[in-house]
Image 1: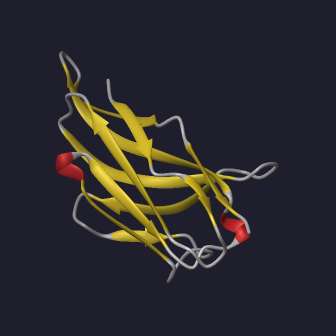
Image 2: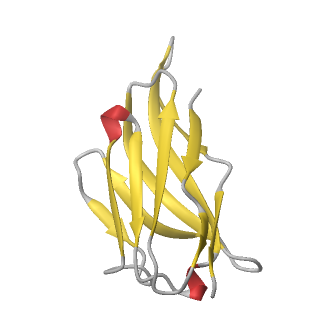
Length: 124
């Protein structure tokens, strides 16, 4: 019911910056949380940052102080500003959307959707 689309990945040198955007489309009741995850080859998917409906944010330890998440859950958009990038930030970055819909006969139902991912490569 919700389509998630990411954009903004690419190749950047160490120390550089990159901006990722995520937009969601579809009819929802609300979006409690929008987040960025990443997965490097041979590693588990990990939380990068999330943005909750009340505006609060949360960051993974490895990116805190270097990455900034912002957005508007009501408008179904979240942005990840990445700075001071390191080679170990290289990964596929996925946008995750936690949303609720009104299901006839069931009331509010909570679901989630993932984007297809965008590659970020940090290399000289």
